[in-house]
Image (cartoon, rainbow, N blue to C red; front, side, top):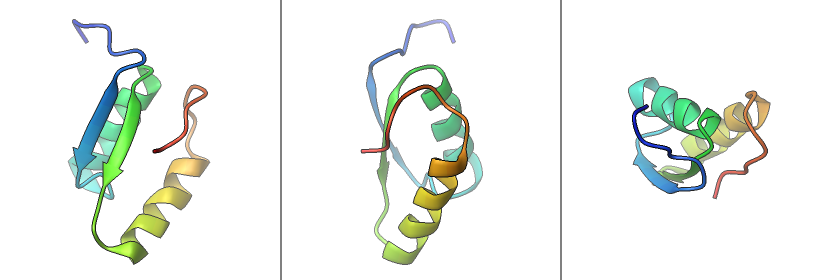
Length: 62
């Protein structure tokens, strides 16, 4: 990335799967604080389980 994103808050709608999920992972590895905006509770639980199991710097989903 051309700009330092470390410590910035990023809101991603559709981070449960596909491009949104990969973008969330990439930005978290770059140090961003990722906010996952999703309406469906069951998808959010699966997303959280996947998020918790991935390698990333010391950050937590908000």
